[in-house]
Image (cartoon, rainbow, N blue to C red; front, side, top):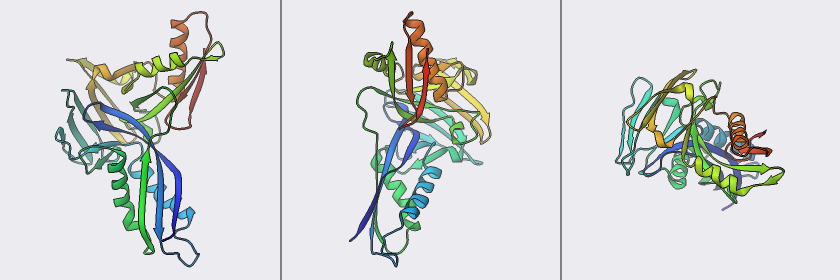
Length: 279
């Protein structure tokens, strides 16, 4: 049976709820393979149609959302009036509370959010849209191969006019730090450890800090958002947590910690995109 494939068709940048690690930002590359009979054009499916239909669905239904493992025992979710309200208990006793418009979450029918469980959910939504000649559809998800240090972070950009305004979406990112013109992998590893599995919040969005937890909330174009999570997993900045501001924050912090040195920071936001700052 003939098959066509498209590797790195798109990238999913999202956050999800992990039983041990809590709120976790992630970036996965998506590969797709489609098998079936050839149509009148001599194709299983036109590449343009693959990109249009599959990328559009994935971008709309999965990307820049909070992915929820619906079969996890520590989850309690109550959708009502177009909003999702959930409580999530991690296995180490941590607690996460999240409230958002429905369009900011994606429910995964599994005990855990994994590349396989998300791929199965994507296939289940795509399959009814495929033409009759398509006999097989395979989606593969996985992280970018990174040599060296990287970190997972979640955030929300309330001023963003698109889906970045959702309070709990995220990325798996790397850093390139140069000190006085030479790459410094030790500083890269140190900074990635500081931000391991972190939520980066704008200080003005923090409502309160109490009993070891931090509350964030804001109103944006898509609606009202609320997030509560352990303070140990939060890092506050004095600006919107855009990648431009994060690159600048890292560069300025390094310059303050290491006087007399010049730093160039290339901060990635997921895969193959980001910002550069020097200080």
